[in-house]
Amino acid sequence: MKTFQILPAMLLLGLTIAAVAQNNLDAARRQVLRNSFKRSMSSHWSGEGSNLMVFDLITQDTFCEGVGISKEQVQSIQDALGSMHTIYENDPRLKPFQDEMNKLMNEHGNPFAEDASDELRQQYNELEARRRERMTDVSTERMQNIINENLTSDQLKKFKEFQISIMSESPIISPNMFEVLGLSDAQKKQLDAIKREMEPEVDIMIDKLVDGQVKFTEIVQNAVDKKLEGVTDPEERAKIQKEVRDEIRKSDPELQKVMREIMGIGKDVADKLKIKMFDVLTDEQWNRMIGLIDNPPDYAKKLLAQIHKEMGTDNSKPGEWAPGPNSWRPGDPIPEGYRQQRQTRGNFPRPPGQQ
Image 1 (cartoon, rainbow, N blue to C red):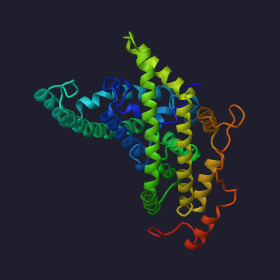
Image 2: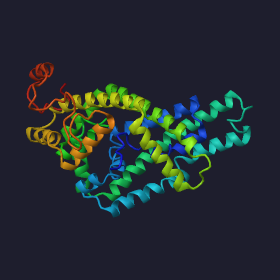
Image 3: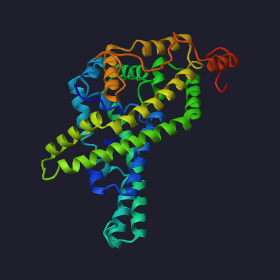
Image 4: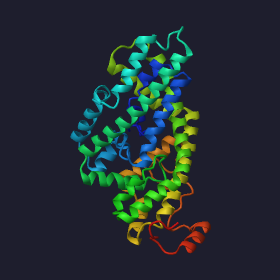
């Protein structure tokens, strides 16, 4: 079975392992990497990158069969992804940054030479940071379009249903998934208000995600450097990089500890979002949401079981899906604090703007 990457493929956003190797991850460049990761991960919550998880999921035959994605569609998506580098060369939003960086190097020399001044390094790093942020925005936009252009509306609908099914089991949350429940314009405004209200908690979660992704990148890079010595064939290098990433993801205890912590934070945020949606959704919409969570499609159950196994949180039989620990379900007692809030707010759905 192919490994399921619980963190979305942020390295696809121009931040490849090869590029990291060339930069040696000094303090300044590590910060550039962190900022880019954070910007791309935040796009899931904002909605700008709500479909990016598909790039990881289409590597899973179980997901593709469940959603009805053909091999031809997968190939088309991967081909489009393979030509992503051309947008960095041709996008007019990026050219001014590259021109400034080239001009700086032409006039003052290599900012990473041993005799380069601290001022030159700082100027270059600031330009690169701004360029990377814009690269992330450009990449997110293009990757979102690739998915929208290659999947049908029914497939996108099933993907959003899948997101709801795993919302308490994933560190990445995209509130746009609720659109599949048929939200009215007034409900969409309420959802936007909830997103703004929860942003501080989401920022903490994303910071943890970034910590985990940067740590993973550094661990992988150290291992990859040793394995790639003397290897020149691009396909062989790519194969080695993937093997190293998969092995570390499965076997490094420190990284798994970080991931379990991230999963816990993501679950807390998802459960709070789920409770807040109680006051937005109609009875019919609420029952549909809970139905997707309590009774995920078979393919979602298999992927959830795989996530728990890889994260070391699997207490069930092999291949068997079970709800996450301490999950709040409709059949469980509703938390007392929430019941008291519910009584003071009145019946749902609450009017737009009501707190």
